[in-house]
Image (cartoon, rainbow, N blue to C red; front, side, top):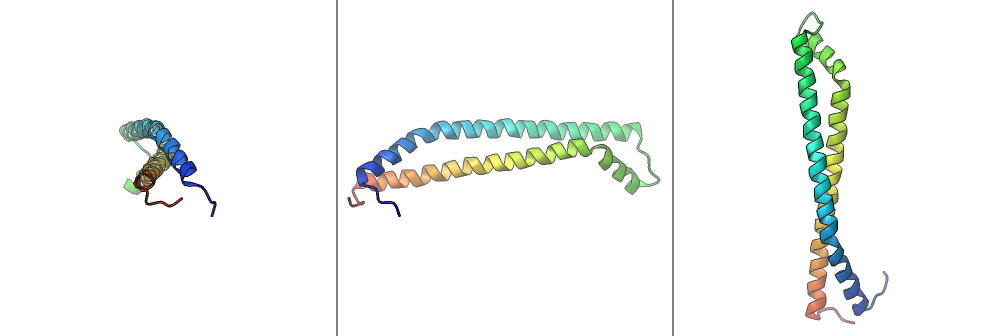
Length: 118
């Protein structure tokens, strides 16, 4: 464990607490943007499925037509899956930053209370 005096620790905690709101704002903004991109990709997928269905899909039965639809919308489905992965990763990033904020806030309270010995 790295040894650090209380004054240096207080300074580090306060510096990081000052940086976190900006980082959280940026991370939340990115999450909103990625969510919008995901919604747009889902709409594109639905639109493509409707277009193909209305144009008439080849196939002897519903299962073959469904399989044909899946093949013809592969690009759109892959785009949705990739954006879902990106949104999930961005949610994790926001969560990590909030957890760091909570931990640093608790540390700052302890340091301010004088309960941490030099």
